Amino acid sequence: MKKIDKLVLNSFWGPFFLTLGVVIFIFLMRLLMFYIDDFVSKDLDLATFGRLLFYFSLLTIPTALPLAVLLSSLMTFGNLGEFFELTAMKSAGISLTRAMRPLLVVAVGISSFSFWFNNSVSPWANLKGYSLLYDIKTAKATLSLKEGIFYNDLPGYSIKVDHKVKTGKESTTGDLLKGLVIYKHPTNGLETGNREIILADSGRMYTDKDRTYLVFQLFNGNDYQEYSGNGTVSYASNGTPVKGAEFVRNGFKDYRLVISLESFGIKRTDENQFEYHEYMKDLKQLSDLTDSLRKDYRNTSLSVANTSRQYYNYQFKTNVTTKPAVVVKDGKWIDSLLKKQNLAQPDLAQAAYSQAQNILSYATSNVNYLTEKEKNVWKYQLESNHKFTQAISVFVMFLIGASMGAIIKKGGFGLPVLVSIVFFIFLYVLTLTGDKYAKDGLIWVPLGAWMANLVLFPVGLFLMQRARHDSRLFDGDVYRIAWERVKQKWATYRLQVQEARLKSSNNG
Image (cartoon, rainbow, N blue to C red; front, side, top):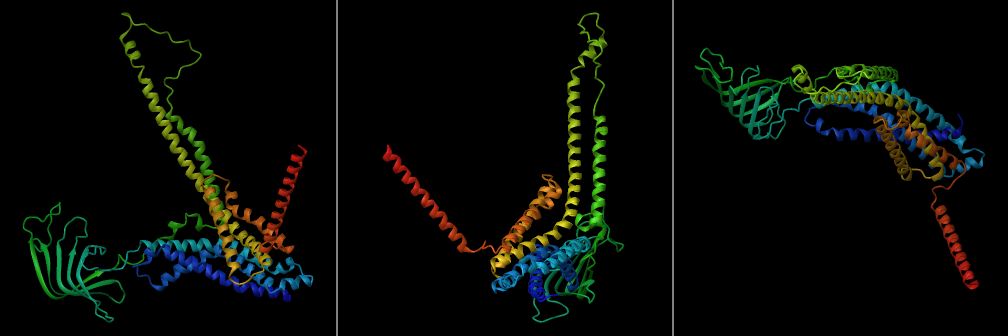
């Protein structure tokens, strides 16, 4: 490897990894801000939270790679231009394309890595990350008692505390609770109402070492229960106590109520329930599924015509070759059955109207059904194209970044960051717009998927051509000089027009 290649590569890798880390961090912060309500009060352990961040950090890598390549290549050639190293290379006979060659090879390698990552790692990370996120969102919040408010998230219990007294130090038995009221509800589904009430002057709440049971240590209270005469609870079908039921009160000075915490915490869902989503599949699975959906769509479309025949009634259809019907006039000789048949003829209009409504409803439902099937085909086809478009966007961003850096000749995190963000936002907006149009069927799916690259690739080629010719595209004095020339030409044109008018008036 030559020294010029080492110089360019050493200038590239530092900003690349720094930008990649910053972008991943920003996307993770966006995730935390979006789901902060689902994370709070769920008592997540560090291992679970770390796995969630790890999965979603993997998901952000394909999105972060184009911006990292754009900013790092722009800073690399911006620094080389700012310190006149590009000028020295050109004076030594080294062209700009030769100086870009090592980064061109790196950009192709990163594009290949992005395609492999999108096809192999991203489906796995999507499946693991979103299934874990779903389990966290559906998990119950940790037990949090508030003063004067009944807590009902424990199955079979309603708990109220009048006051909570802080101990002022770490205690294994928790804070002191004043004025506890605990209602125990029937859990068999056949009984209703509150059959047992516990009142205590004070108590403490804590969990065991394995955090599987919640313990209430109650002091100085009474346990009120409703029993039948034989010592078991007896209720009618409507939930009211049967005749002969009695109330029993048990006083205590120190009583421990143990409640299972099985309903709390995270319960892992079967990951197969999430595999239907297009983000969870690789390119081969997407291709096979797209073909299956297309065949299903064609078969369903062909079966609509045959199925719709049952909604048509041919009972009153007449043959055009038959003679026209003879209108029968009323008279004494008309049979009574024929009269009844003639009188029933107006009901044909109502029958036809009802039949037309049935056909319209059937056609509308089938159109909606086929439209949804076609949208599913578009979604899977769009995701298949994105396996390639995200990889190609890395190369497109390299063309723009390297050319812009050679033109503006500014390094650091000032102007390069601003220019990179503008182009990245442009790429992001074009991608979202193309995806929306493709999913709605407004444009061809490959065109929507490749819209951002089709727009920005000519921009990259144009900037590369300007950079090779040492264009001063972003120098302010160039535009000031051009503006002054335009004003001079306009002043000259106005002077010529006035002179022409004076000549024409003098001749007149």
